[in-house]
Length: 116
Picture 1 (tube, rainbow, N blue to C red):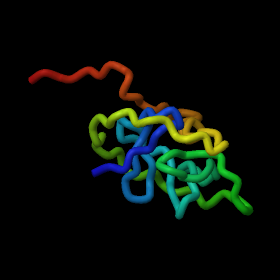
Picture 2 (picture 1 turned 90 degrees about the horizontal axis):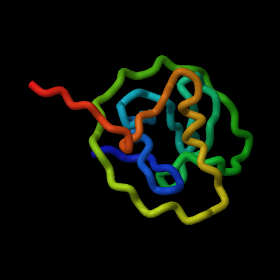
Picture 3 (picture 1 turned 180 degrees about the vertical axis):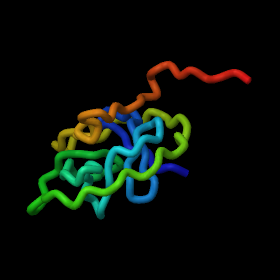
Picture 4 (picture 1 turned 120 degrees about the vertical axis):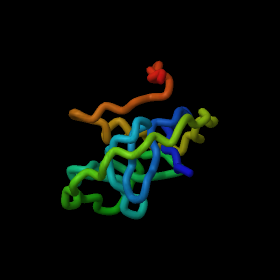
């Protein structure tokens, strides 16, 4: 079973597979080390807090060595929209994982299914 990653408003935007965060289409976006979240290129993004990537103050955040992206994995399937996160004062920064060429897929978009 996938561990979904949510926006602070409760919408699922990605999932965790091993130590990597993928968008809802299965494309790798970032890496998790402890609670620290990094882009594939090694730049620091934020912290994983209550299944959400947020800008939580931390001591001395730094970038790490870039890694080769893992392969695209099968999408885990639809997840429910959960109640929004209590406002702890941390800004949602999941979108920073998606900057550049990486565009996330959201379940709210229509999906084409091939018929046999």
